Length: 154
Image (cartoon, rainbow, N blue to C red; front, side):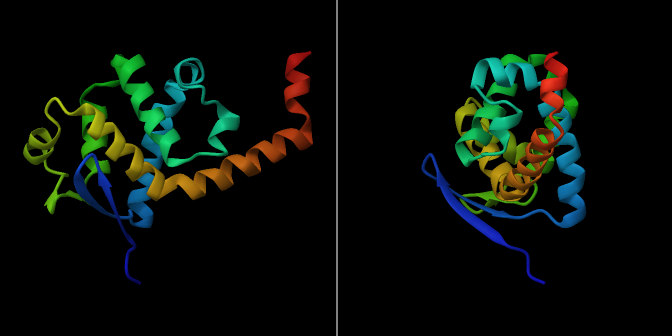
């Protein structure tokens, strides 16, 4: 089966991304969710995104998530986050140049973090957007069915 490729112009640069393989997608999703979990309070306060909001995840929301993590939680910006980000860009090109190598990545995004976060948000959206919508919608339906939120409030 052929992998799906997406293309988009971001801030004047042509991006192309092949979606993650199943195993790579699961590996990166676990890491992404760990970062999002650590940032959940900041996401709610700074970007207006909460658990319920993730059920309606749009590309712009994914960009907000990454930007909020970057702006509000500098302690997450360690070598692990850098490695994670490079992994996320492994299957992506910018103007025909593959971005998963540190030297290329550095040249493309030096002082250009707005484009970096926009591109990373797009990569997250094309790989996980619809799937996360389904997961969070089903989880929210289950929460409503059980009435657990009401129980927690009392």
